[in-house]
Length: 354
Image (cartoon, rainbow, N blue to C red; front, side):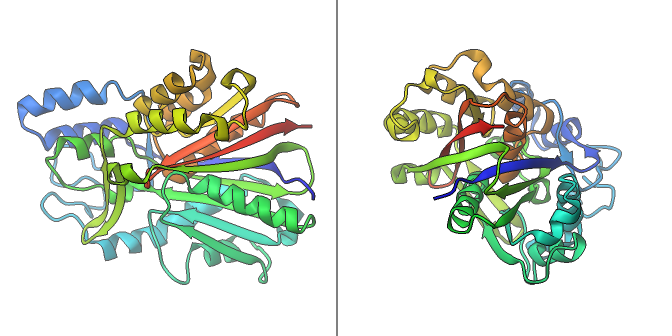
């Protein structure tokens, strides 16, 4: 049976850098004593910049969070309004990501389109928007992977691999598009404000085919710790999507990796892995992975750099890390992993190929 390769990855973020603005907004929601705790903890996040499709207002302590005055203090928009905003902004960013692949004439030869998102939905949806915007074939086979969260990109790669291995002529376009900042909530809960200070908007697009060069997708493994399912959740509420992210998540990930290390790594020791493409769900998550697998500090540098520059962009984020792996020499063995509700760890082994 033939192999499957990621030939190219392109990434895109919106134009509005918002990290410091959102930190100041979040701090303004808290009493003075809680504000100091927030500022200390937010300063340890390892994030310097994040991007949003929505232009911030001039004053983070003013009556509106965004320049369009959609997020007014005391009157944040409901879910329907947020979905309308997604339908307007997401196709633009997704097209920017696909355009970055510079497919040229290859666009007309694509056979499959896979789109992952957990931050907005409509039907007809962003998959059909991309067909129209990017001049994809009308008959392209489309699959939407929705609401799985941060690990959806690896599920998308898994599906792309199955498609290519069953039909070596297939050319699969995978698009991971997330507008996380759309779900800003007005709250005084410290844990939720800290959670929101992780998130940014971003898009990744990848071409997966049966021909090298690139990243060969070797195997996949999913670990679910059902007894920890309440530690992380993503629910549709009346005023957007609501994230619950417990402070116990890093410890749970640490334990899950220890329990499943042999299956994840195919019986290899961690030092047999040359490249680590770990979803940077947060600094503490990366620290937990590093401790569990006893990795050298430099092993997760690509993940920490993506976190520093972009924050957590949900399903798109691990693809930003894998984009760096495409620059590595041929013949290196890598491990990718992403984490999300369940508590779930989706993992894969890959090899760089010339």
